[in-house]
Length: 340
Length: 282
Image 1 (cartoon, rainbow over the protein chains, first blue to last red):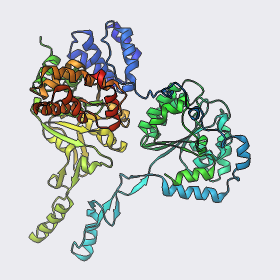
Image 2 (cartoon, one colour; image 1 turned 90 degrees about the vertical axis):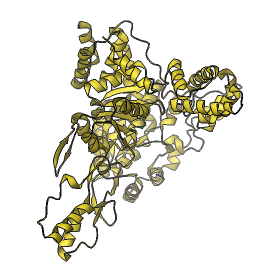
Image 3 (cartoon, rainbow over the protein chains, first blue to last red; image 1 turned 180 degrees about the vertical axis):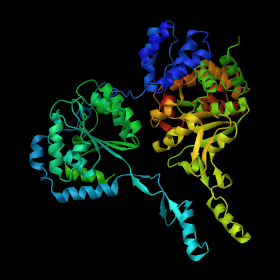
Image 4 (tube, rainbow over the protein chains, first blue to last red; image 1 turned 60 degrees about the vertical axis):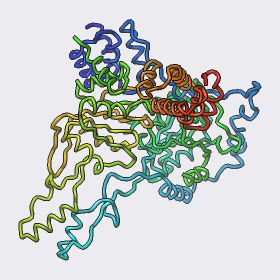
């Protein structure tokens, strides 16, 4: 029993699951280690992602565990392959030319400071183009699937006759919007406009560079400049390096954060230039995509017509994205929103 | 003492469902702990089928709730029959009787989940990932206590606990609160021996040699990086189609090759497989 206690302590299941497992053991003495494995796995594991960790833990506590079932390698997209004659396509090596995002170009292209008119237009566009979802609440409607008994009867008490069915329907409401903004050094010129965009949308917003910061509250201000000043105060990792994978993982590991992505339109504003190992980033994006209704990735590099997502990290996540496009400043963000 | 899991395996096998030890343990636990069973896996590995077979084996009614986007409580739990209520009012008026109870169970239209509480059954909640995440909230009370609260009437509890099988293709992640109430099992593709048993049962009369090469080929096809790797359902269809062709006089390898369209549903996949045709023995 000591082994079992140690194993359970290490896995740390929630009480319900622990009770399930122990009940199962009590009612059903496993004849061999294989059966014990299945009893434990079915009662204690709740997610496919947990399986590798579970298998490893089980193997350390119990010897002779069965070889675990192989499953398809998920989310492991391959790095770009050289063509058949072994040569890389010249244009494949380039992550865009970076020309449109270069400082030099930005000086020329520098969009004018955001005016109230720009922001007002962006807000209108957001209201019009963001995807909707049918509300769970019912409202009186001209036509609808359901009969509104109360209104029908109230109308009937006036005339004494039921002359028509009053109806109810489920009106559309806006889908939740989640914005994740990369504030690393490489995006320094774009970050202020990205923040203005998040302010205009009044979306659930996080920034990430080397760490993750929730800025939704800071953006909840009438004045956009006050909001941006608030954000500057609490975001400590701006203009630093990027660790996209670990930052996104931190987002997903906090249940109250990850819940905000559920069924939401998620927009990641980042150049996707992951310095480290691309595998954690690919893993995190895959999970984010499964949580979200749609996952969009907008990058300043994407404005370059020659841009191809060929860095290892971007190539790995490409299949999980519902859209990859360019956005650098308010006009380009406006264009993206209108294209939704 | 006989092994209840092995017994269950034999009863399922008698209905032509060949489950591995993991799935059998999962089903056994779902039955003995009275917990809902959440099944995930690639399309076509038999997630829905296990519920149908269970209903036959346990001799219970199968109630199926197919999930889709926009599914709501009115379609899943219950709905008030308003036209009937209004007609009743008119009838009462006409007969000069006082107006009776409008929110009476008589006016309740039962939908799958409510029905599942009233008759002993196997309840299949199919492709839950297609429903919106808000819908999962409706299931919470149902799955933990097997009861539904109707504001106008009160709480309706299950006469006999339904056996619940919930399937998901994992296009969307399910809420932890929902999963906590369930036993979770990931159904993997079957190994060659089990797939062979399935083929033998579902495609009777298939020549030994053909069945062997078919199962081997499917196993290898799944290791290629395809858009849609074939499930068990596709394997069976492929076997049936190949048998039809060979009964009409085609040679075996040719029959398999010609009916490849039933195994693979994407043109790109077919091309990829034909490239490896030699290695697959087609």
